[in-house]
Amino acid sequence: MDLTRENHEEMLAARALGALTDAEASQLETAMASDAGLRALALEMDEAAAMLAYAAEPIPPPAAIRERILSSTRIRTAVPRRVELASDGTPENVVAFPVREANRPSAWRNRIAAIAAVLVIGFAVITFIQLRRATDAAADLLKSNQRVQELEREVTHQRELRDLLASPDSSLVAMNGTEVTPAANAKIVYDRKTGQALLVTDKLPVAPAGKAYQLWFIVDGKPIPSQVFKPGADGRGELRTQVPPEGRSNAIFAVTLEKEAGVLAPEGKIYLKS
Amino acid sequence: MLRTARSLTLLNDILVAAKPAEITDAELIHAIQRGDEGALGALYDRYGAILFGLVVRIVNSRPEAEDVLQQVFMQVWNRAADFDETRGKAFSWLVTLARSRSIDRIRSLGVRARAVETANQAEAKVAFPTGEAAVLQAERREMIRGVLAELPEDQREVLLLAYFEGLTQVEIAERLKTPLGTIKTRMRTGLTKLREALKGRNSELL
Image 1 (spheres, rainbow over the protein chains, first blue to last red):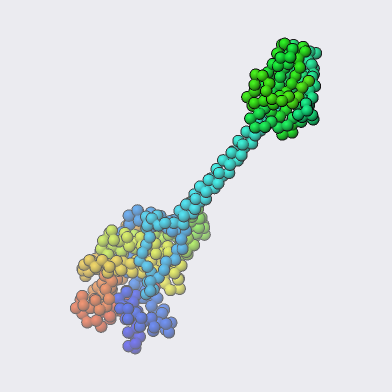
Image 2: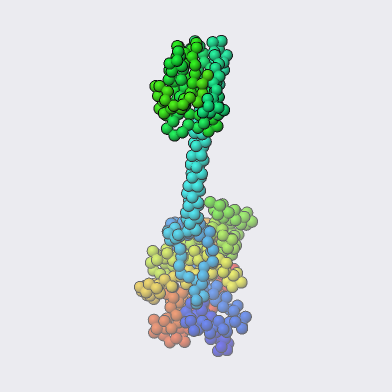
């Protein structure tokens, strides 16, 4: 055996036992790179050295270690299993334990936080929309109620008018405009038994501020005051009232412009008369 | 839960394809490469005691050895793809990982007394095993101890100092107060005899 071969075998034996210095190991690797025989011998030396592990007394490790190892693999399932090598090519000496993994801020926590934020924002938007819809619905309901009340009043009014006109004791009296308002006119229908009456006016001027029209029953030349009313901008006006018993047979009806609160004796001009 | 189920499936595939005794170490490592936890558990069951004994022998501390053993198998799990059958047997790869980790540990701790006499206790005790694989390991253990017993004392001593103490040839020479050239010769001669003896007794070993 030549010296070089013997020297290489010495180095291969030392390499297999991990007894080379770094410089020696580097030198041997260079020689092995170009010598298949050396590589084959190195493999045999390595296998022989590995068998020396049987020289140590086998010791069953605690059962907890097996569980710790398998638990760690389960935790690491979702992450890349390849570990990085150190600059010298040796593996990193860090093994992550479950608790360390658990302490790391993880992506799924961030995802949960994002989902929670979206849910909160979504809930707020939905609540706002529903609140707005509820407010609109309440306003619509109020308007509807007002409209219903108006219709109910109209129905009641029409029913009263129908009943009043249909009554065999009803009387219809026409009223004409005076020189103040020649175009104005009105009709009053009343029940001679009950005194229930309805005045409907047309083309009356809008009452000035602080003023209102007042109905009068003139019996034997004496005016009996009734209620005040204000016609609309279209000149139409209505007044439900009660004809006193003394005026139900032969009364004269008149409408004057008076103070808004009404007066006991006529003070203003006559606008309508029967 | 899915991962575990998949592992059981993978391991089951192996068990169906071959009887337990026929599942080779390399097949287990290939299964580990595919993410089979069951294969890692099987490999641990097969070699955990041997490797733990080896690590305890090197670091001379059970708590430290437990930590190192866990690191070794986590390294197997993480770097199973690095295993190359053409560059050596799976058992050699496992032993190399365990030795490297153990020697790194004692060097980082710097507290272990590297007594020569502890290295000579290697062949003292007998194994515990049960089961077919354990019986096979017991046979190998007896074979190795037999071969070591046949080696001259000075050669055996050098091999064990390097292997279990992690000493370099220079350190061994200093420890034994022996010329470095002599240490190198003893190491080469001793390991060559071991290799030849193992080849002669069981071709499957090498």
